[in-house]
Image 1 (cartoon, rainbow, N blue to C red):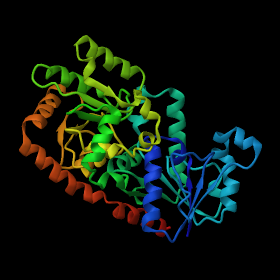
Image 2 (image 1 turned 45 degrees about the vertical axis):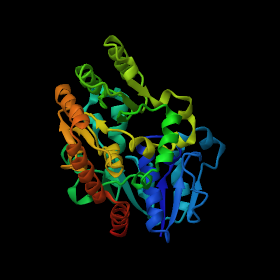
Image 3 (image 1 turned 180 degrees about the vertical axis):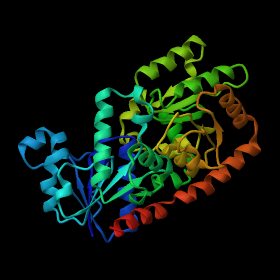
Image 4 (image 1 turned 60 degrees about the vertical axis):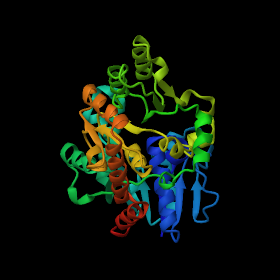
Length: 382
C-alpha cells in the first residue's frame, strides 16, 4: 500500500504539528515497514531525515511557479502530483486537504487536532479564524475518514461543525520513542552543563502564548518565594506573553528564577531543534507543569509520563483524558492551588513516587504500537 502525506510540517515545523507528523511517520515505518510512504513537501530540511528509510520518498514542486509560491502548490498544484504518485490513500496531517483532491479516485483521511480558534477567538485574527474554519469544515466534508486526536476534539467537531460521529475515529497519539529510554547519569550531566540547568527545577514545555498560560506558574512561584525557591526551566518561545512574565518576575525580584532555553546559543543545534536532548532534560526535572487553558491533546504530558516525571496540569479540555489519575490537577487560573501542588512535589516523596508509577502505567495506554495499529485500521477501513 502506497500512502501519501502532507509533509510540510514534518520538514518545517519545530513544535506541535511538526512533532505530530514526524512521530506518526516514524512510528508507522517502525511497525509497518512493508508499506510505501510518500511525503509531499515544499522543501526538505534536517528536521526530518528519511535517507535511512528505504520505503520513503519525497515529492516537491516541479515547476518554477510552484517553487516560488509553495503555499499555492500545497493548496491546488499538489493534486496533479498526488494523482501521478499512484497512491491508495492521501492523509492530510494538519487539519486540511488540498483543493480538488475530491475529484481523484484515491481515498482521503484528515487529522483534526483542535478547534481552539472557535473556543478562544480573541487569540486569533479574524482572517486566521476564517481560514481555519473553512479548511477544517471542507476537509471534514470531503474526507473519507476523519481522525481526531482526542475525544475533546471529536466532540467539538460534532457539536460545532455537525460532523457525523460515524466518520470520526479518535486515535490518541503517541510520542517520540526517545522519551521511553532511561538516560544515563553521564548523559544527564553532559546535558545539564550544555544548557546550564540548575540542580533542581520545574519544567514548562510549550510555546509562550496566552492560552499556554505560563504566567500562572510565575504567580504560583511568587506565592512560594519565601517557602521554596525552585526555578523554572522553559522550553518554548514567544513574544508578548514572554515579556509579560519576565516583567512580572522582575517586579518580584525573581527574574533569575526563569531559565529560557530557547535563548541559549545551543538552542540552534540539531539536538535541541529535533528534541534529541529533551529526555535528558525531562528526567532531571522535579515535575512538568502544564497549565494550558485548552488543548487538543497535550503531548508534553505524555512525554513526561514516559520519562518518569510527575505531572501537574490543568483540569480542562483533553488533559484529564491523557493523564487520568496520574497527575495533580488545578483550575488553569488558580495559582494558589498550583502553588500547593508545587510545594507538595518538593516536600512529599511518597506522592512523587506514586505519580511517577501511575504516570508510567498511564503512558503505556499510548504506546507506539497501539498508535500505529489504530491509524492503520482507519486506512484499512476505507
